[in-house]
Image (cartoon, rainbow, N blue to C red):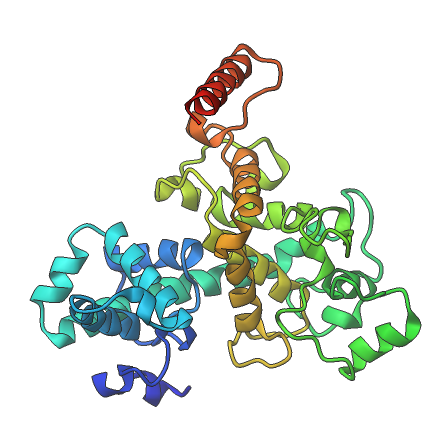
Length: 351
C-alpha cells in the first residue's frame, strides 16, 4: 500500500478489507497521550493495524450490532471487533470522543494511535537487531563466524546459527540438501511454519507439538529487553521505572505481547533489512497472525492459560497472587486441595 493510499479519504476505510490486515498510516502529528497509548497497545494487543480504519469500522459496527450479533460476522471481523473493543476500553473517554466528534476526529485519533504503534515497532526492530546477537550462543562463547550488528545480509539461512534457529520445526537443518534449499530459497518458508527457536532448548517433539512451545530463552530475553529494560535481560527481574511495562502498569504477559516478541525475534534473525508486512520472504504478518490464532483458540485454552501463567511468573514475579503458581506441599496448597475435595464430595452427594 502506498503513502497516497494510506492518506486517502474515509471511503478507503469501508469494508473492502480488514483493518487488522492493513498497513498503518504513517503521517500524524506530534506526540501526545494517544501516541503513547498507541505504542503500548501495538506491543501488547495488536501490532499490525490500520487504526483509522479500525476505529471507523468499529463505530459503524456498534450501530449494526444493535440489531445483530457479532457471532454473525466472519472470523476476521470478529477479531477486528475484539481489538476495537479492547482499544476503547483501555483508554478512558475514547468512545465518547469518537461518537461525539466529527469524522475527521476519528481519523486524527487513529493517526495518532497508529503513529505510536508503528514508532514502537520501529524502535524495537532497531534495538533488537544488535541485541539478539548476544543471545545466539551461551555467554562467553564466540559467535562463529561473527555477525555485524548493523548489517543483516549474512543472517537468516546464510549463517549456521541463525539458520538453525529459523529452520522450521520438524525440518532437519543438519541435512546438507535441506540447508542448501533453505539458503537458496528453493524451499520457501511460510509464516505458519514455525521456527525451532520458539521451543525450549530448540527441541521439537512432533508427538507433542505444545511441549516447550513459546518458552525458549531467546524469547524471554527479547521480552525483557522490550518490556522491562535491556539491562534486565541478564539480571533478576524487578520493576524498573524506565521499563515500558512499568510506565504502562503492565503486570502480566498478554497474548498480543507474546506474538509481538516472537515476530520481532524472528525478523531480527532474518536477513531482511526492512520490516514489511508485504515481504514474502519473512512473511511476518502471516507468522504474527498464526501465533495469535493459536493463543486465541478456545479449544487450546488449557495449554494457553498454563503458558501465560508461566510467562507472567518469569517476567513479572511480583504480580498479583492470582497470577502466581502455588508452591507444592505449602499450607496454602493443602487448604486449596482440601476445599476442592469437599466441593467435589458435595457435588457427588447432590447428584
